[in-house]
Image 1 (cartoon, rainbow, N blue to C red):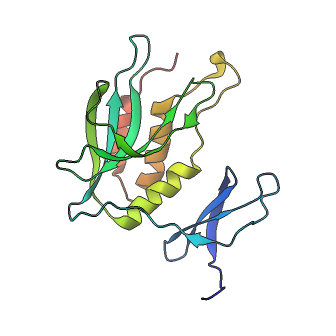
Image 2 (cartoon, rainbow, N blue to C red; image 1 turned 60 degrees about the vertical axis):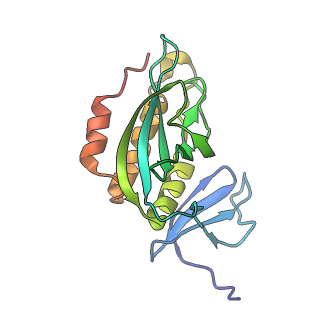
Length: 188
């Protein structure tokens, strides 16, 4: 086994981990000290977990109804249709002043009572693209604000930030992100 470590381009540190990409596009991660960011483990490649199937992965935007006084909840969802309502969900939840990442490995985003809509953003997501999605969502911080009057975004804004980064990498189409930006609900 080789002890050579990859050369990582633009590493990002988040919650005790560093994430980065090597020159060949492979995503990598390692544990770091939470305050000093000193490496605690060597870089290891990020291996996407793919369900065994020959059907392509689909990346979608899911919208869900909340209470009457709240905007629709947005999340990103990856699954293998047809017939599989379960998949990987990436979302932020909580109060708009202190949202947290609440990603789920085995979510049913299509069958719940709150389900409102599903918009396909990539209908043939490759394993490498899935790994990049994982990297981007892990590195994108949830919305935070010191108080209610300082809130500038919610789950919808977080999804748009993630999609802009994915569009820059060619994983989703830029015009789709621009369309979604026009559909953002006002932040109260």
